[in-house]
Length: 108
Image: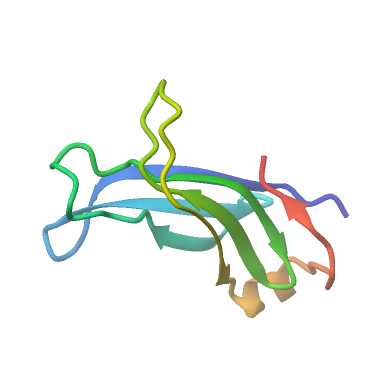
């Protein structure tokens, strides 16, 4: 079976508590498998809160792996700290989609 991992960004989404947040949504074959908040840095002025670049993301063994670089500015090469992180995905959703173990699915 062919698997397609995609991601979508939701900016300034109004939450139940009345605050606006930014989310990153991951879909596997058009089924949402993960929703995470985009990092927010309080030391940056309001309106400039989306300065973390998230790239090189893939699904492997029930986890989404990402590379994150802070302090990225559009059109400039100023890069801050880079780190590799991973987040668990619902095992139930992966079983429903019949994703095999040890299959690496890169995000498109």
